[in-house]
Image (cartoon, rainbow, N blue to C red):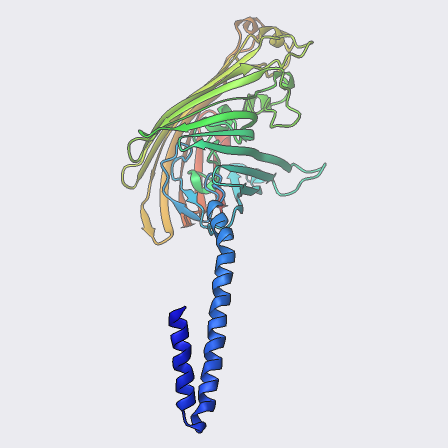
Length: 444
């Protein structure tokens, strides 16, 4: 206060002693000084008023991306990122709590019979997520398959995911809703830039269905030494949907009885568990199991104690430019003999066992900026009906032959999340299925 008084007295004295021609200039300067002080005070008040909102904005972090669905891709050691994969980190500003993501693929396939060649927009998926705070988020995805959906078309619209996830602490999270089951490499990370080949491999489509989701509740934990674990309780498969006259039952036994969250029968629930070790750079080793009764307590079903068990083991190693991976999966239906006996005469009874495996090698042959060329080769075997119940033998049912497939080709990445693909597939048992494939894939 004394300093302000002294300053005022000094200014007054200077003004009084100033010549008449200078007094007007001094008045103008004093008015400008007063206006500047008032402006600075107004800015200071505005900063103080905005401070609480700024602190609130810092709490809201961007929604964690679905696998490989974001703008900036980084190398991943996630067990859900298969050969050739990149998992994206969010590039959105920190103040944005809602984000859009998605992926899509377009393909052309030309088998030996040129009349069977076709091109299709295999799928386009739109995802929307929201981060309520640093611990709680939702993730939703809407999928459209094969371009057109109507009563006369083969397209499909489906909810691929819709769940709430809450981070309990740094090493433990819980999710509830419709979400992907963490078995194998492809099911959780099935975006086109994340896998080699125009089409998803046969083992992780015919044996482990994809995209496989269930309604339930699950826990995910991570340890300091690189071990991720998953466990949960969900809806399961519905064997009462089995159609022994439909070839889809032979193409993918579990795909034929998958409920997909649509009025899913829940008389019997299922359990799953998975482990993945990522403690060494470039190495992932893991496996998982899914088990549950599948008769869904339907009163007229001939095999009320029918049960499914599906297990898999996988490994991936990425030394230098190499990307090496392998996976084995085995499924079995038990206590289904009585149901199969009611289906005698139909071509596709429920198998007792189905299984498959593949080994794959990819190599980053060239890279410059965002561009990259990655040739690969994959050898796989699968059998969707390796064994039937012994009671069916007397009716002429025998195990199906094991199909072996060699797939060789390359991915050319225009960007880590935009890829052009080409490959050729050779089938051992049914060479008429040999085909050339081209594809475009993207994720954001």
